[in-house]
Length: 292
Image 1: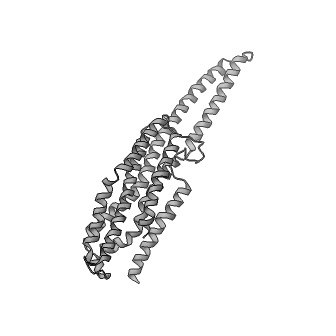
Image 2: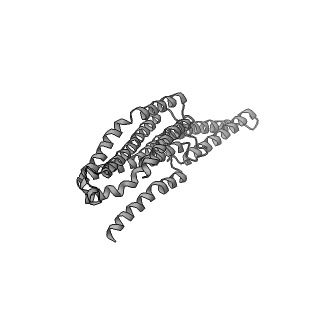
Image 3: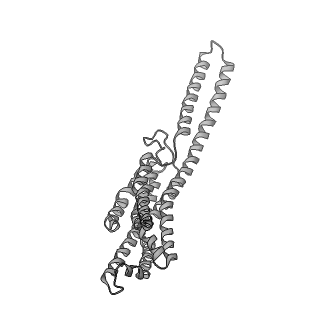
């Protein structure tokens, strides 16, 4: 019963709090903040206006599966098509389909938005407080998107029961497969994509500093070779170049050492505690109960 109650609130929170936060934090890393606003505004509009593209077919699939398995519900005491309880089941299934369908739409929207932002000119901040170069915003969006979809995962035990004891198991496992794949992709793909993009940005920054360091080293060596004890200006110029080299080396090390996978310990703990563990224990209890 959690999905019909919590689902609408979770969708509202994702739309009003989570996605706008992604926009605000991504702007800090953008060379052109206005371009980021344009991308996020576009996909916020997409999320609000095109949800039916995923919700309608997905809801039709899950309601169809429930209706086709009327025989299983009859074993639970439902009196058939004329029994109001059966229609309550279908109503619940339809509402579950709508909520999770919007969750699917949110996942696709988040992935598309992250890809679009990733194509813009971005930078990483090795001194960012999140310790991830400023990329924790992607992990935050990914985990909330995954949690939005995973609200319906508590019904997976019923789906497996329908697949084994009901009819039309191919359709049941198709729906379960789609659901599980979307959950996995909604979290793995955005974080992996951003990591790859950030690696390329970091390599460009490292190469820029590497080239500058070598250039300054050559100039400093030339000054040292041609320096005379009385040539104070040349000595000061050499010292300035050595200090600049040290500064660039410090920046080089900062870029080289920063973690660029947008996952903090807090995000991982939230993923495990709110999604993986509950699903694991529910499935464990379901299948253990069949053998005891």
